[in-house]
Image (spheres, rainbow, N blue to C red):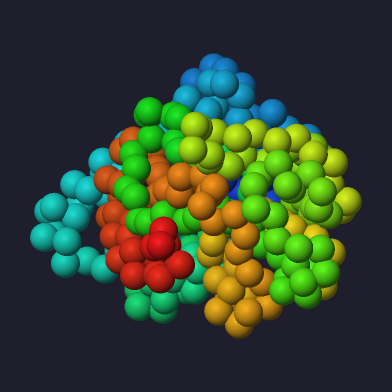
Length: 300
């Protein structure tokens, strides 16, 4: 069979996490997909996938092959685009990941608008606050909030978000408004995230202030933490886009604004070379335009 099709099939198995999911995506029978990958493994002489009853994950050799195969297919598609003057409409799948709350509110609608105007493009958006290896997980593109330490990734900044502390007016009327970071120790705190005693970081006149305090309530989703804050349960840390509507409506108010840490960058990131795929490059340009226009990504 065509070697590019063979590599594309292998990449689909990696991205979809198994033969059955790949067969549904490619609309080919599971035995056909299994045979293609088995023939590929036999020819290269190494095991490319670790198979379990629920999922397939690439071996180290499989991960390397998948990454080189992506670049090879991207070069092929770019060559075809150049030859045709990019007159042929882009086609194929774009896989993205974004933080749960921000992705649900802002990235998903932007991606759907892109798909609506490009009939040949399909999009798969994973919403998760869990950091992921984009190459290993097979993502073309990600939205990330905060600094990026991996220097191998390409980055385009689209805005900033503030790190704020909020509470309901009713709670502050009952307990008083904290005037300094140390005053937080006398308040009820609502924590969201995976770490029960994660530090609260603020910026004082002489530098960063780090406080470790015992929260009254901890939950792993920001939605639930903010609901508790609206209900007068205490103070909660949040990113400004998460409370934009609450601040406008007056259901939550900010405290200790003069002690806020530096705003966090909001960025699009992707593995080097992935933007050689025309559909990925177009998605990047679309999301940059859409996200840069959001009021919630202006730091003040």
